[in-house]
Length: 67
Image (cartoon, rainbow, N blue to C red):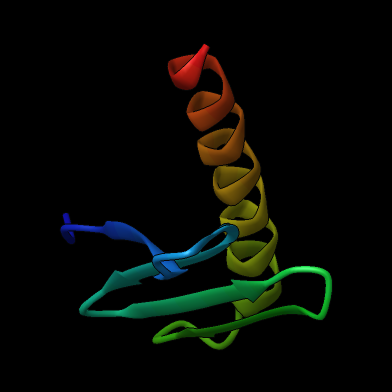
């Protein structure tokens, strides 16, 4: 299994998230949009959708963790 690293794209903005591994690069720049590069082109659209869900969950966790 790959190791995935989730970070903020830019340290000053909590809305911008990147997810990286050896086989994946996902970047989300809200409200502009998001992009996904994966090694599996057949499932790339589904992987992109899952990455969006992960980014949403991370934002929810950030909100809960700062209260």
